[in-house]
Image 1: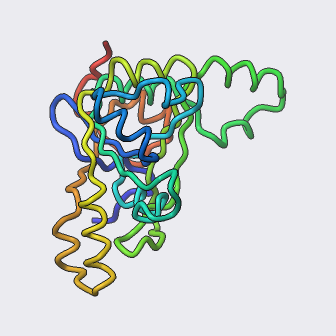
Image 2 (image 1 turned 90 degrees about the vertical axis):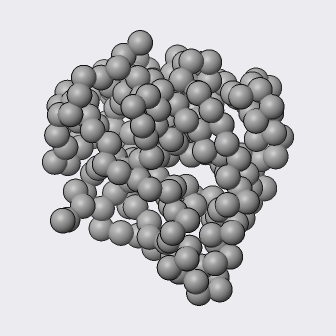
Length: 210
């Protein structure tokens, strides 16, 4: 079966969905100690991007080796209700092209706290695939909601990602693939699917807004 161009694939259960972020040691250690991001060192006033795709996170961080600002990989389990709130309060990053009035666009942008980007998904070698992966940028009121309400658990998976990367370098691709997280298509109602420009998604359940 062909993977739809724009489809959310993630590790999730009935209550939570896993997203990934990469940070430096100071922010990562603080988050693990408190079970959430604490300001400081986390900057709550800045946009923060969450990614459900493990391999896209590996691409973005270079398996945690791109630079010391992204050397710790965190797996963050957040509520599905919060995740769907973010999607339903989002704008596509390229949506500015739909507005001829700049002031109108800026007004709508200011009132919408979440940005959506669809970037090429990556394979285990971090090469681009034909279909895309979602990146979710949280700003304004979405950030304190994420930090204080949505996050249920934070796990440091840096050692696991390094082990997978070492297997790939050594040519043990099949073994490395067995260690990748199992990501399945994430179900959404039609209204949210339209908001984020999802491809060929089906209504499976009612959103769990809080």
